[in-house]
Length: 181
Image (tube, rainbow, N blue to C red; front, side):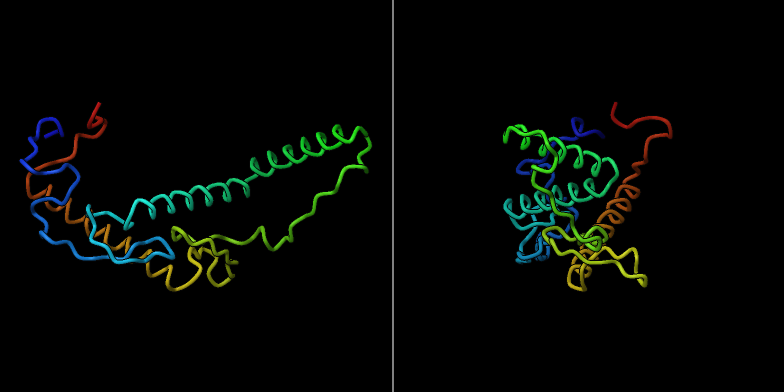
């Protein structure tokens, strides 16, 4: 049944806990680093305790995406072009055309380019991947455990949901067909 074909029970809210789940969900810790407050989730896949923590996680995702883009070839070329335009504006403002009159921009140390950022929302720590673990995603054990806890909980939830759908007789659409449209 599609969402428009299934009637919503009285008092039920779409996206809330299903009736088959326990009536009182367990408390869990907020995933945002620095908050980690225990909360009762409103939805099975809720990761954050409040709207402020969700906004903080959104800011962190944007910061991380910008950082990844700046490390790409296209991001570096755009940054070089931006710096060139800035230097040109400074020269025009001072009224001279010589390249030596414009202030020089500093260079970052080469080691900073190799640092990775932690995969936990809200964690702005940078770390250098070692030769022993070049695919390292987290800055330390606390962040790694927090992310692992969330991934395992969500995979259990998806697995149980799939089992419930299978028990109800639902089946995925035939290959090649799109389910909604």
